[in-house]
Image (tube, rainbow, N blue to C red):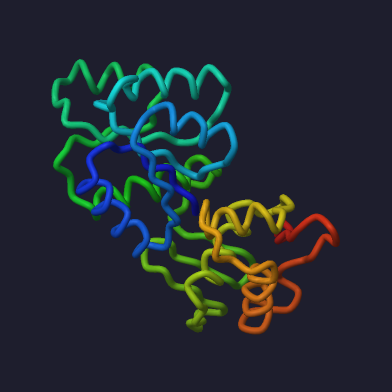
Length: 219
């Protein structure tokens, strides 16, 4: 899952990035609203973590821009503004959730999982497909109640395809979700992780749409 973090305080941003990367997310970090807008124009994100007190243009203006463009990425506001009026204003401008600094990282991760789950129209905290079950909170995969070990990035590919079950996901979209703006991914990296999932779980789970991408068909 790919997250855009919009936060101008480096220490806070570093702490959030460390926690989210450990939880299996890829985090792209920008320090101001204009850079965030450029990122949102060129890329898709599963979640936006948005500070309000940004230098120059504030976070609320970015949130307004995002919603007027019809973009539906879930947005969690992270701010030191404690007044109830500030929370109401943020929610009324289109935020999905609100955390006041300082906050507990485990709570932030739980809220992130909940918002991503809701954005995909899923009420259950677990992802299921036939006899396969994935628990994003525990980072576990099982088939017929038997634990399956996957490499961290193979696990992320499986989660991404299950979240988008019934839809074709391009190789480029998968790579971008795994690596964001980083340049380290080789061209065959996604195929390697798809092959591992097929070996460990089922060769029929992920279907290749030649020249387009991959899909897990609906049950």
